[in-house]
Image 1 (cartoon, rainbow, N blue to C red):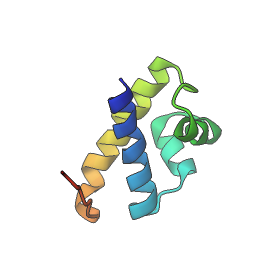
Image 2: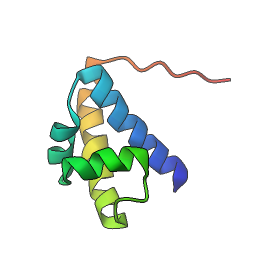
Image 3: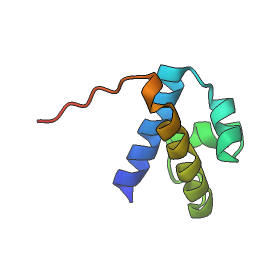
Length: 77
C-alpha cells in the first residue's frame, strides 16, 4: 500500500509541476477539498481509504490523458 501511495503522490506532483495544474484544480478533479489534498501530500494518512481510492483513480486517469504533454525521466539502477 505504501508503494501505491508513493505512486499517487508522484503522479500528483508530476501533474502539478510539469503541467502546471494547481492543487485546487487537482482537488476538484479528485473530488476532495484543496486542503485535504495538500495535507495528503504531507501525510498520506489524512484521507480515508475511500477518498484515497477516488483520488487515485481520477488523478491516475488524468495522468494517463496528459502524459503525452510532458516527459518523465525514470532512473533505474
